[in-house]
Each structure stands twice: as C-alpha cells, then as structure tokens.
Image (cartoon, rainbow, N blue to C red; front, side, top):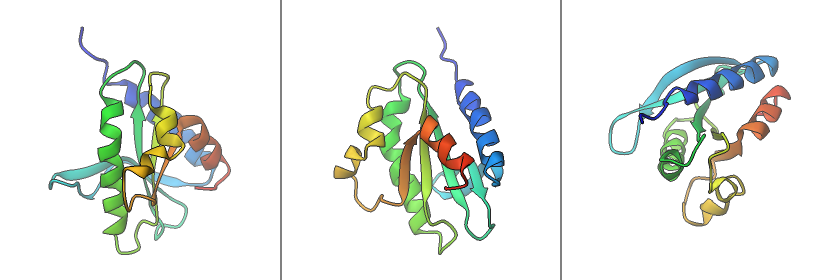
Length: 140
C-alpha cells in the first residue's frame, strides 16, 4: 500500500492560520540555502513580522510509525547550519512535530536529543500544539 505523502500539507494548512493570527507574514516552500551535502534546503514555511528577522520552519507529520522520525536529527543539523550561515538573517529556526505516530516525540521536544547534537541550540523543536499557541501569541 503506498504511503500518503499529502499529510504534511495538512499540518502546513493548520500552521498558517496561527501565523496569520499572530501577525506574521510568510512564504511557503522556500529555498533558504544549501543543506549539508550540497542540495538545496527548502523549508515548509519562512515567516517574519519584520522582514529582516525571518524564521525558517520545518514541519514533520507522523501519522503512523514511519521514516519521518528517523529524519529529525538530520533536519535539526541542517536547520542549525542554515541559521549559523545566514549572517543575521535567521536568529533561530523551528522544527514542528505533528501527528500521533511519533514514538520519540518526547525525546525530541524535551531537548534530550541535544545531548547528542552540538551547536543546534538555535533550533527549537516543538509539538504542533505548542507551536500554534506560540504563533497565536506572536511569540516566535
């Protein structure tokens, strides 16, 4: 049975109204540079209230157990690298985890993964619910 890869757009469509309510502007599917390994790095959303302070957002949806969970550490590394190489353009990035299929969600959102990753403090790893609450309150 083929996997449904459209579920990520569901998460995107739930995040965008929260950004709008928080007074943020945004663009979807934006290339922000090169990923580790040299390929283009595209984020799901690039948002800002002041254009000189942009925030890249990567959305990961895990409806059932699968490969999204295994991609999280590499995504953290790539987002951190983008922030560090963005001469002041980005101060931080968000990795938003949505869906009920995560087995390592708490490991990621509580920051336990940071024990294994260095120089990634600029990436905030949050649940969908916490991200929406933060965006609604204009506190990204």
